Length: 386
Ligand code: PSV
Ligand code: MN
Image (tube, rainbow, N blue to C red; front, side, top):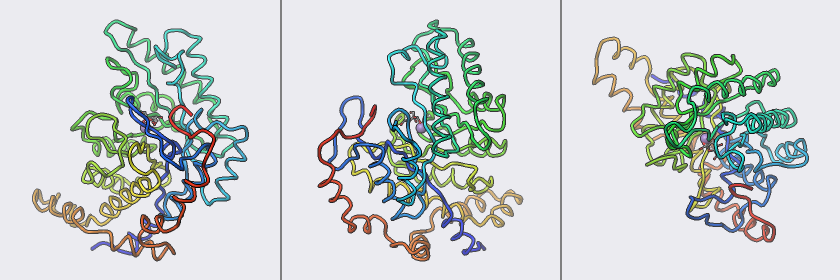
């Protein structure tokens, strides 16, 4: 039997971080479709993020991406967030949108380019000092397109050297989260292609370096929950970038393509004791054709639903079936939880938190969408690269 009060308490204290860039315009390499009412600066992105938190109650922090969210005064930006009931979260670095980075950034063969990349990462730690952010999220587009283009092993050495310099700059309580991705934009080798490479670097760096799992960054068929279980067991799971994929790094709404996979991941999180603030549960998504704020609300709810189902797994019954070698019984315990309709439970949780039980409808009624379309005229809309 599951303790429903404990399940509800866990759901009430859940924290899902939304990404500033999901509020801005985005697209594929073919087209960026502009949407009316889209924020024009980081302040307006925070205004929208605050609405997601207001209606879901579980999205209290917002990740920034530098330079897309560069401002004069980060302390003022942090205050702007706090005045709206949210806080600034992870600082995401960007060493992939500059001509200098054609052959890589921190792994580039030219020491001057590596210096520039490391300096950017150090600048990001400085921003963390000003915003009070705990996590620096690192993703490198570094890699090669052709066999022989560069020395695979030397690139690992350069990576280790650059990461060590940034690690040494971290303050107490600050962390470095290293993200991996198996390909794109490099098509032959990628310098941090998988969790094993990220883990090896983080292990050498020390306890403030942790691996981040972007759910969209795996080859089809990869057992992501196994990776999650292993990283948690090793004390090296720093966080998630949640999103869904059908084909490559699609950045679709988390839980949209494969809600069962999301449940399996969240079950390993719960099983491994990872449902704590030590693991950063972030979204990393782009809403190219759908309305952005409602899509982010839906994404937060999808994570909540998967978490609720994971919490409902009858673990004593599962353990008993597993110990008895009862293959079908064990599978049935897990599937019972997955097949539970948790929406009534989540409606109750929201009511107990003083929220409207139906966040999408409450947001639609709030008039915020109409207000931003009317007010955000003129200026340049935020989007990829801005
Ligand atoms: C790379 O594909 C990535 O997942 C990294 O987290 C980047 O910072 C982010 O996308 C930008 O959306
Ligand atoms: Mn990511």
